[in-house]
Amino acid sequence: MVTVSAPYVAGYLAFREAPFLVEAAQRLQEREPGLRPQVLLVDGNGVLHHRGFGVACHLGVLTGLPCIGVAKNLLQVDGLAKDEQHKGQIRDLQMGGDVFPLRGTSGRVLGMALRSYNKSTKPIYVSVGHRTCLESAVRLVQSCCRYRIPEPIRQADIRSREYIRKHLSSPLGGTSPGPGRKEEAEPKH
Image (cartoon, rainbow, N blue to C red):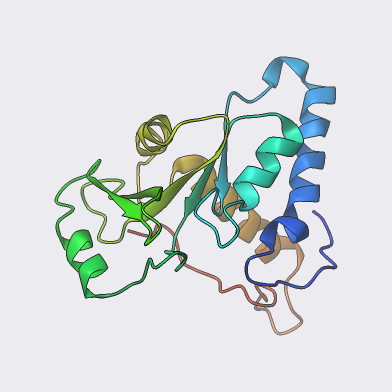
């Protein structure tokens, strides 16, 4: 449990959350050196970012670990938009593992839209964070998906929400997900 003092500012998630994530990785290394992660899946973006350097990049550089950005929503950057062309590409994703590149107007491929499993109707957006290539990132993320969201990220979401429900209930019996965050039922498809 951490206390976040910095406000949420779009495009600057790393400055709000990366210090706590780096500290958690360091604590794991100190307490259980045999459990050094081979790769980190980050609930956010890597190079698919307004400055080309999202939270997955920050975390990777600061820890030296390979990182992959996995976003639930498309970050509209470099001409990428949730327009009719994008919606059509999503409809063309027929089965789990199908992808299409997220090519910006600059011509650069910033990530991939991935239909993570057969029953999913919405893609996830995979981008390189640090020390990995896009093809390997997509393959690894897809292999971790039992539902729409890769299992490590899904479990972190479920467990953090459960902790909040048990320990931080409001006096009226409900919970508050915090500023700028919406509580969502699991599993998401």
